[in-house]
Length: 255
Image 1 (tube, helix red, strand yellow):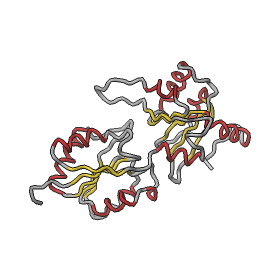
Image 2 (image 1 turned 90 degrees about the vertical axis):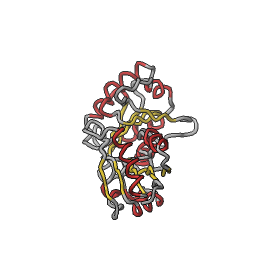
Image 3 (image 1 turned 180 degrees about the vertical axis):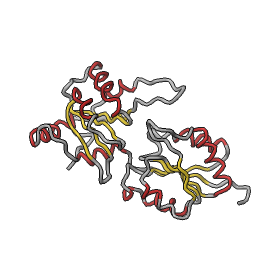
Image 4 (image 1 turned 45 degrees about the horizontal axis):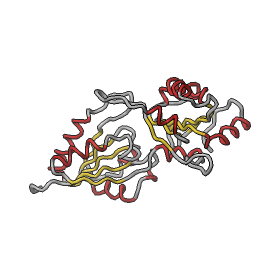
């Protein structure tokens, strides 16, 4: 290449299903020279980058992952030598994806960046449950929160946001269900507040469990190894009641 740097696209891979990818994202993958992808990205999505060099950069909660500063450097280096570079992130790049760190690192080196949105897990979970996260007279606001804190980062009072929202969606929190339940009840939520845990939203392996905040820890024990989000709020009340009445105690996939 000439001395002119290439361009990096931060692309949302969506919640899992390959056919939820945007048309722009699919086109960029087909045209890319190199693709850096996260661990949770569906292999079918990665495979769309048929002509690209494909590089896994980890980022799976609870497992070994590539240090963010190393990812930043690799993006900069690739942009200088490979032209069209795609940084493929699960869900939407701008939500719990550390996109700002990558954008800032690229801008600091004079490299152009474009962000291509993707469907985030909260919306895929809502679709799986067939329950709107907002509803007139019930929910006028939604909070997306996560209990995860990176090394050397100061903690935030995310639990206050979840407790005060009409509907809350907790990312990367299902494995901390006991703490989540305890803290939300201590902040004033009723133990019988409806909840749902959705695993592998949008995939064939998708399944969901519903119940109450007091029973959230038990619901979480029914999860497999897939990524999951926790949905909390009164918008779920009718669904929780219907499932309880239909098959008491049974495990069901979202219908």
